[in-house]
Length: 296
Image 1: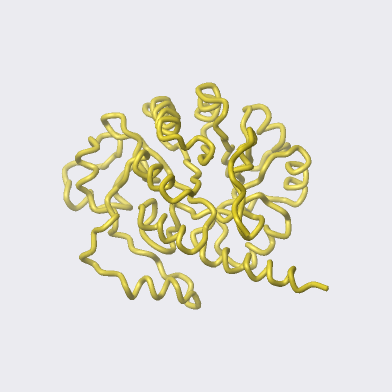
Image 2: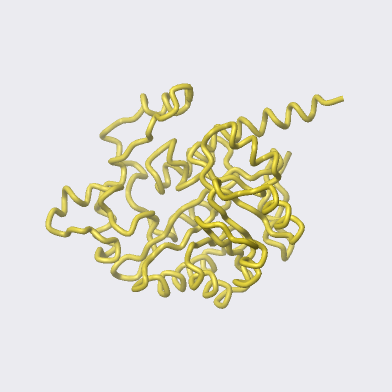
């Protein structure tokens, strides 16, 4: 089964899967396969069949959106070791040239699933001296890779009160300059960022991320003028999915790593599932498709 080409005003026409719904989203590039938010993780997730990858952006001191989850560099880089006197190692305090010198491969894939052969194999092949694709990347670099692969990406806008407005504007600008508009879904927990995205470029798809339940998720999405609902998995109810489906609002849940939960959300009919383990979800979807094909 081939992906349908983009040719509609509806962003969802570009967001489909060869194996049918739900779409498989690789959380932070697929952090069970390689260091999170690296191009290496993204390429591995593409190779195993993920439908899109999810990444986070923060703003450097010179105003460049870079791909990293935390506001500081301590957890996912070697900054605390090489820049001892720069604590608390905030991303917004580093120039891009200095960020590019850091190693973001100090946290290799966590083998937290003893029965997962792919994770074990990747761990055993890990070369501690290999730095290829393990530098912090810019949003532009990540989008160009995604474009070269003919793939899609969910860009989550992070930032803080000092950087978020500029980060949002730069993110939208770079998405449009790289010609990636139809292949990008922008999400955020920050409502001001989502409103700004739609004001700057109404054609860009945007999704409301939430860790808290909404009494009426449809109303929350409509109030902000966005396109999709991205709830934490523990919040999702069958009623929420049904109401969103009736309103034409895709539901993309995060972060789902266990096969039983993947099955449950697939049965509920969500639009997408974001997971650290995209290879597991792809395999599950293929099995589901085979079962359906074998029905009399």
